[in-house]
Every structure is written in C-alpha cells, then in structure tokens.
Length: 112
Image (cartoon, rainbow, N blue to C red; front, side, top):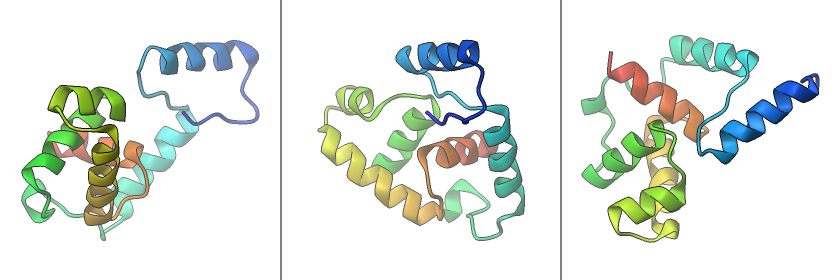
C-alpha cells in the first residue's frame, strides 16, 4: 500500500481498510504516475507473447493483477510463498517493471 504524506486521516483509514481486505489500494497521484509510465515506457513488452513469461509466471501475474497476496497465490497454486516471491521477482525483471502494482496495471492493460 502506498500512502501519501498529505492524506487526510479519513482517507488513510479507508485505504488501510481496503488493504486489510486484501485489495490493492492506490492514491490518485500514484494511479496517474503509473498510467503515465505505462504509456510512455517503450522498454516494456507490448504484448503477452513478447514477455517470455513461463506458464507459472503467467498464472502468478494473473493472480497478482487480481490483487491477491503472495500467501493467497501460494495457497491457490499449491506452492510456497517463497516460490511465489521468486516468480514475482523474475516476471518483474522480464517485464522491466519495478513493482507488483506496475505489473498489475500492465496485465490489465494487456486484457483490453
């Protein structure tokens, strides 16, 4: 969860409740930054077939994009949480992205 220093207490409580419910929480500022980065960064693969992701990395990316935690992804796929973390690290490198949030945005954009 990304918080901004100028957040109102009510907004902070709402974001914390969203995060506690397992949802990805973003501020409007971060959404705008991510959208701009996704539109203007030519280093990212343009299509899913260009990524070189393994089938397992693709399954994990789908779940990350759905807002699921590493623990929940691990449980669903029958693997350890540590294995999920390794796969997330690899898929971020392959996609030339820095965070799970960027990967989720990229994945959702590919579905359009």
